[in-house]
Image 1: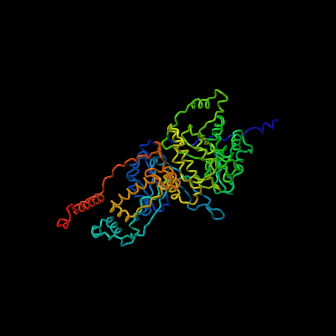
Image 2: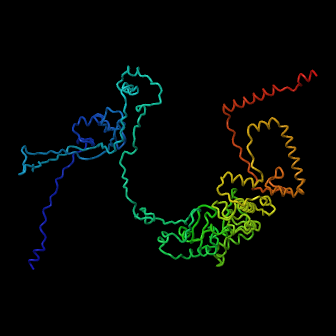
Image 3: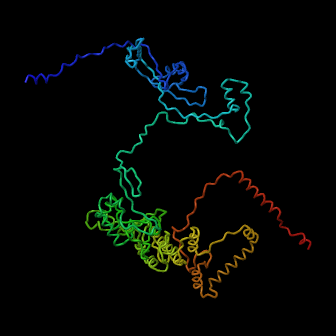
Length: 609
């Protein structure tokens, strides 16, 4: 037992030794030092001081630098004082309170060596404090880029600079400007005083962001993906020229969701697509309740991509299509084409009877059945307008006149065109449907119910049943304008023809009278029946039968206020330039000379007679 206690005894600690303490002398009696951290090995102190401006410049900079304020003459390191193109390195002067010590090393004259002849005795060192360091100059800035131009010795500018540097009056007086020449020498381009704006090195720390992982995409490309990123998925989009359509959601989306079966809101959207394979998003949202709309808006990044796909161009652009259904292969899909109407005047819809009660029932949660009330902004019946934005599918248009044009097989093509203005309908026929819907819809925006008689001019169009795919845009636009106005395209008059018409103005007036007489006889119906029959024949031919009207009709065509052309704003008159003033004066002088040459007196032969 005693042996164990002796083993458990701790060893005796060594005695505590305190370092010697000395009292610092007062600052007034202590010598002060200024230090320069030279950024290069020093073999000669005088040469090193010469590269930073000498001892006088260093002393001036140290004395004028107070509390970190910049000095008027900073310390700069110039390793090539004779080269004026060298960019110096500035020093940063800071205040310190370090102790300057004097280190003395004592060693024997004959140092002690080992068996191999190496010195084993390092010597005896003694440290003695001599003062306090109050200023220090550090070179922490990076060296700038250097540029040394190849200057010839006979260059006039270089010789002038040397003369100014040496105060050579004769060299300055003999300087002459060289003749202008486009082949400028290299010495004519003065380099900038600094190439880099950054003096301190930047710690870029090039490494992946925290939380990123390495993933391989479907194409085999390796990417850095943030694990906590917002995983947003847009609905899959294809081009109109792609033959295959998507049949199921993307595998990446299903992998991110972690499930194959759709949730409640996705099942609801899939059920709507089973009832109708093509929808607009507002139309689908109008079929949902308020709670379901909130769920779709909260998960819209995955809901639309989970239930269908869309086209990025063509007649079915931006429509939600059921997976596996190709509207380009089914002629009955023409009823799913959509018409988008703009409201440039931003006309607000006028309140319709019963709409306030409908909206209150839709947004209030007082009654359980109120949530089943759907919005009607995607429907156009020709009597009421439910939204100031017109985006309708042809199957959602119930106006009798528009419905007759949509259901008519006259303008249906044998194939689905990739043109956004065609699809299964010919260009002219689909444009006629759109113009009729536009006139009725804009009339309802202004509180006017447009009747069939108001669309009589649109119904008299001579519509082509051929597709315009492959035609130029200008040609198609010109053909549409001609069909709208019923006039043939005007040809530009040549300059010679314009001069002939100006010279024979009297003949032009007679021709105009003959033209008016021909129109009157045409209205009277010569050789083609009565006046109405002649007008109908001319309208079928696609040419105007009366001047000033696009189509012949016994009653004038009414123009809605929103279809009248807008008056252009008059631009501020610009001040007349000198060239315009001279041109105007010369034209007026020519006119006055022509008028002075004309005489109203009869010819001399007539007087003699």
